[in-house]
Image (cartoon, rainbow, N blue to C red; front, side):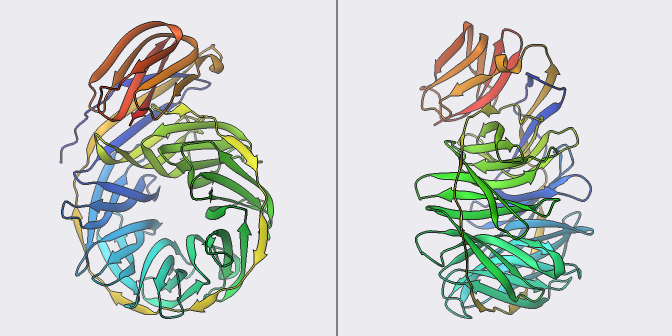
Length: 508
């Protein structure tokens, strides 16, 4: 498919250092949702998720890009004799990638492990599960012996599973099962798995063991054959789910996750000592992006948290969890973040809006999280207490395995629908003078732009590049009414007294 650039303009902003920032969105002919992404062995990036067909069937979708977000290839993987599949995790391995997710049969759902080479060619594939229940793979890691460990969830009424349980599968280097275990009480869901010392594994997620209506975050350690070493729960007065883990150089740990009570949610960062006892915990409230997605340690030993809601929030803290800056985009859902040598960040995920549907997105920001269409938001930070408890699991096993044949179909190239570049420049004007507030975002009709500087003019574009509004101005505040325009994502370019600010907002 020929790549078509449907909308492109140059964005200039003022920042403290010179960096290049850009954003690319690629639209597929069918809706796509990309749940995972990571850096590839050739310094590019690879995404995995699902693609919906017009027939309602969903299949695994994988996209490979170079280091600048240029698409190199994409593949659709369809299991034979099944009703579809979708990927939750992709892992770079020597000469290729391992993918795990779920394949949907007529009566049940199985975990799959698919091995492909670096061009997307299938090498082998396996399924794991039980004809009596439902299971899906969520994370895959390579083990020291060259095999794989898969973290999944299993639901059913047999093999020791009375409710939802954590499901571990250990395989050899070609996917043959070596052992499997299930761990459950009243319901557990796993979020991550990491290799630790002594060939053990650390698993985190959330549990309902003490109260079916109140989730508790949990951590558990198992040895090399799945025997439980220990399990701890971490609770607050509202539900708590642990989502990601980073081990720090001094042996301590940080974890990211989500707090919620069914109506409101907030992402959090939790610092623990080497024995997984809490040191401090901070939640970040009053943001439209309230569900935790990713967490990394930054080059300056602070942390970068990614959360989603109506879009994506990039939140930078110092080493104590104190907010340093926060940026927001509308319509983008980042699932991966990485800091580069220039101290900027790569955000990978997908975008969704009523005009263009869904697309995969590649965003490069500067060191302060600025991108072409980012805006500043101001969440509040609050310490919260953590209660720690120990508990145990009912342990069972599911040892069923079968070979499944996947068919790989080249998807060609997706359509490039958005390619903006932001070149930041050095200026003498203090950054505080150039802060542009845009609110409310999303909006139903009226949106206001406000700055300490002077707004000289504004242009508003829709997703296909059509100018829907152009207006001259000479004040620090400007409100416009778009109630007669279709719902969707819009882009603005504002001429200030000493520069240009760009961004986007959602009309809903």
